[in-house]
Length: 149
Image (cartoon, rainbow, N blue to C red; front, side):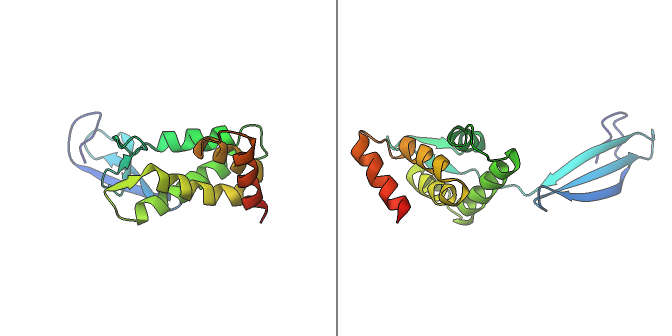
């Protein structure tokens, strides 16, 4: 690894630690030339995932969109930032475990809905109301009945 300070490539690892629940490795390195220390991160490279939207347009998967949707549903609920981060991580694992290059947004929505059911009932209904595009009170009540059963 090339030193970011002096440009020499004679660096060595002095400490390695797993981070993000063993999904990545943080390495502390020391440059033998200038003596400076720096940090690098190692993570498995994944194949870009393409999401097929309802209108059949395709776009690259964006973790932030998933986080934003879950955050919106969990607004003012007793759910910690760590719980939300864990939820996003677990949902991503399910999505990427399918080992597909393309996935329909409806499949992602269903995976999120399953996870939200267990996370918080109010957040689940909030997410469902946006995801399922409730048109009136009756469709809202039908979803609520499914949840209660």
